[in-house]
Image (cartoon, rainbow, N blue to C red; front, side, top):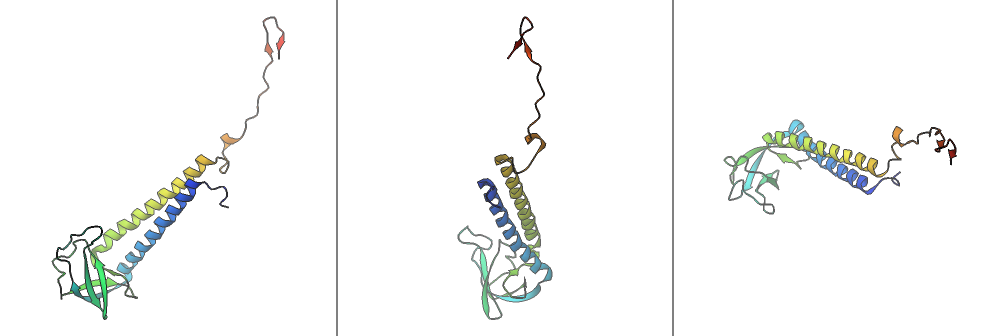
Amino acid sequence: MFGKLKRLTIVSLLMMAGALWLTKLKYDDLDVLTTGREVIVTIIDVPTRCGEGSRSNKARFRFNYLGKMHVKNFKGLHCEEIFSGGTFILMTDLEHSVFLFKDEGSEIKSDVAAGIGLALMFGIFAIIGQRQKDKSLIPRVRNYKKEKKPRQPRMGRYGNKIE
């Protein structure tokens, strides 16, 4: 089955699978927003500079829920409402493994749409890569040999045939 697949096609299919997997994770977060429940959490620690963070030091706050400490990343959302020792309302799933703000839905929807678009793009690359590399896998009319028409014999200057 995979014997005729080319490298570009295999890479494109793997990238498509990765994009679909990441989209599934984001879709699960979207499911938490629609079917999850609201919980009140107690905030333990907040960053000194709200909303500012680098790639290695992301802005996040720690909170306590049901005796367990959790960490939530945020991008400067709700800076005024989040303070150490206060309470805040978050959405969670039944396992209490994912905690989301109520207004994170639009960002998650755009991530899901981008992931689906990316997966479609990699699928198109896989098809194009396979067609360019091996035209025999996808039969087309122009790939078949045309029948040669019988040619008229070439005639020389004095009416004799030239072989």
